[in-house]
Image (tube, rainbow, N blue to C red; front, side, top):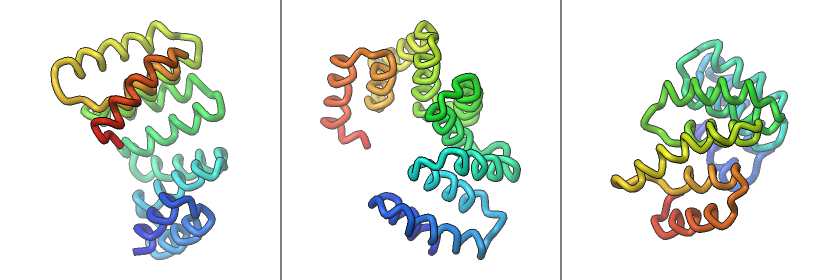
Length: 167
């Protein structure tokens, strides 16, 4: 219950309270990867990136196959401009969650920011092909266009995401 309440609090922007609730949950279940992941995510949202990395590392020490922890760690490395590490974590997340487009979009984002737009465009091409072939979330495509600096196309795909109610 404390973990779910922490999720609610973080979603409404009450981050210090969310962290406190999550810490209570962690005291009750210190080896829960779900709770440790929650701590890492809240710390990320608070822009406490070094503490977030440490919490993600603890999560992955308990469960190296925790795809969302790899995804979150990759996002944190992007914020710290640690692009090789971000690329490695995003690749791992995508291998572990191949049907989820978020790791692919994050990987493309890291490639673009690290000065390797051709690799980002390869992922974009895959996503555009998938979206042409049937239902596919639009926001990951918009994210890649943002990273590539193509604002008009990013806004176009964000508008599509809104129309489709893509969260």
